[in-house]
Length: 120
Image (cartoon, rainbow, N blue to C red; front, side, top):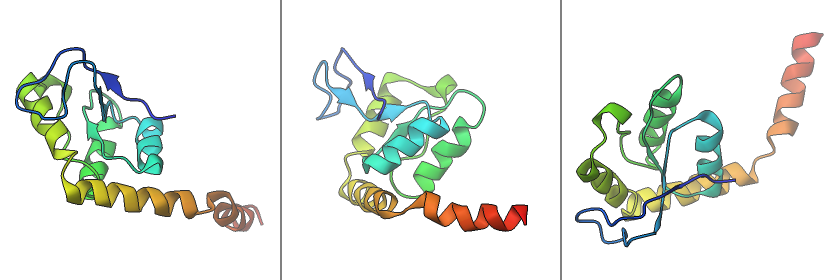
């Protein structure tokens, strides 16, 4: 399940921010980040605690979203800028390609021999 936030008011200078539109941003928890990567959609991460800054940095490093915006530095203008970045063709293409790769892998089949090797 992909979690996104609902923004009821338009944000400044963002074409896709009509009132009530679903926006691709989240807190950057491991599960939410994994779901967005698997879905193949760009994400803007707004971390506020624990491992969230790490996952936000990974999203940016993978080219599937812009640099994270720490919660303390979040403004309407920075949010609008970040959301615009998620619509860039390169970020959208990177997210889609990564999502396809993740959906195609069989993580359990790859993990079983590793785990069996650890208990022998």
